[in-house]
Length: 328
Image (cartoon, rainbow, N blue to C red):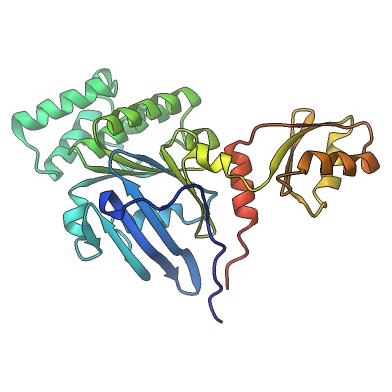
């Protein structure tokens, strides 16, 4: 079967100069048998940028990150990381990047200190240099009092801090993080993002995958992936400003019934109940408020409609609803 052309991604600014990029991918594709996990992805990530991958499970985020790490070989397309082509220079690139996975990947039967000492040896950091770097990281990530604790006995937030310390121990130029906050509490997530911005301020480039909208809003730039395809790319502000539709708040005495009715309307891209109100995204950008009032005069005359600012969830819904089912 012929491969269909993908819907062009929702972009809010022109492509940037690839010569300044730490990551450049063109047509990056990964297939597993008949299944296409990543489908012709174009990507540019700039130095010292916090670049986010937003998408549901199965959207291709992890597969893309593993190709960027040199852990998976692309089926098609090209990718350059830190000026080096992959997979040809994968071993050289691996020494210059850090990688933090969703699942805690350090040794649970070793102490915090032993894990960091082991990683220092892996990166050929020994003696006083290793001790100085480990001391620095333990102080920075609040691990000093945990040095003798077995890694397996740590809380989720403590494991996260240890994993980050291990990933940056060799001072990588590029740090790739695959849903690193999925197993921690909100305060630990907030602290973790503060640590990421400290790294970016120091010149490290970061690519972070997430399915949390509030985390996506923190990124300098953002790519939305859906079923292996890039469906939106830009800063969060740009993407919200370029939303191809209008977001409306609806007050109704029967929000659940009205939600079910509006979901069948051809100009409604998405509708969700937020408390006792409905949040409606329509593709009618210019006259959406007037159009919805007219429709509600027939199906819920007492309902009230008002315009409300767009958010990233609206962008995500609009981008992914425009992306057709991939080929089999």
